[in-house]
Each structure stands twice: as C-alpha cells, then as structure tokens.
Length: 118
Image 1: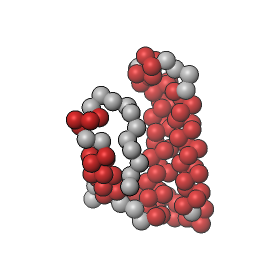
Image 2: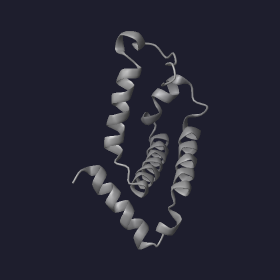
Image 3: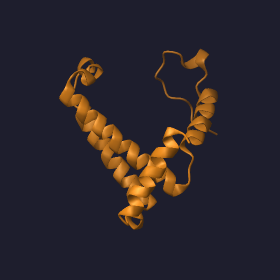
C-alpha cells in the first residue's frame, strides 16, 4: 500500500468514525478545499518574492504553511476518494496531456499561455 493509499484510508476511517460521510459531498469537499487554499494563500499574500522563497526558514511561518498544506491535502484526498478518482493516475494523465500542450522547445523559460485545447 502506498503512502497516498494509507492516507486515503485513514481519512476515510476518520470520517466514518465521526459519521461525517453524510457531510462529505463532492460540493462540500470542493468548497472546503477552496477555503483551505485561500488560507494557504493568506500565509503568502503580502510577502515579497524573497520573503516567500524563505518562508520555511521562519519556524512560526513554516508551521502555519505546513498546517495549511496539510488541510489542502486532506480535502483534496478526501474529495478524490468520494469521487473515486485515483489522484496519481489522474495526475500522470494530466502530465501526459501537458507534455503535448507545452513542448519543451516552445515553452522552456516562458510563462505565456498555451492555445486552448481543441
């Protein structure tokens, strides 16, 4: 069993033990995920690029960032579990798609947008 599978199982049991599955609808989990991403953003919002790069050097800031990342991961993994999406498989498929959309020779060092998929 992989680490992600173990985490998925642990989160599923956590919800089951508390009878929270009734609240873990895809909509509710997606909204909670968005909220937690907002909280992560708030930790970085007004920092300069230099401060952002060094955020993990400050123990207090690092703890808050780790906590928010864990919250994001929790809701993402839980949402994928409820929707029966294999996150690793879905991510590999997306990377395969992006390999085609963003060829190295065209996009290396560039932040420009790609044309929409047809």
